[in-house]
Amino acid sequence: MIGPAEASTAPSPSRDARRLASNLWRYPVLQALWMTPFFVPVIVLFWQENGLNAFDVYLRQSLLALGIATTFPAPVIRYASVGG
Picture (cartoon, one colour):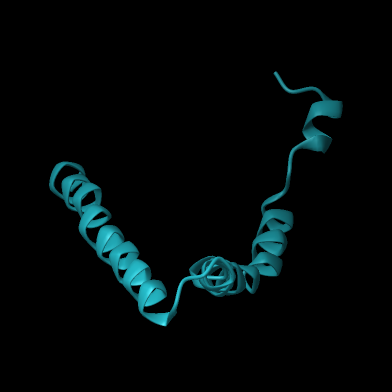
């Protein structure tokens, strides 16, 4: 049985709804920041500082993109097949 002290600390549905509504604008902002590749300009400057020319930088970026494109879909496809 819930006592009076415990009942007053339980969140009310209206308070939860207000908190959810106040967080709705944050989701697209965080998604945009997560999807933005901030590391690419930094790694390019690092590589160029260490003597790589533009061809070498583009070659490494294409290998990285190819590696991500070939390894990332495999777990997703497996989860979609098993998980439904």
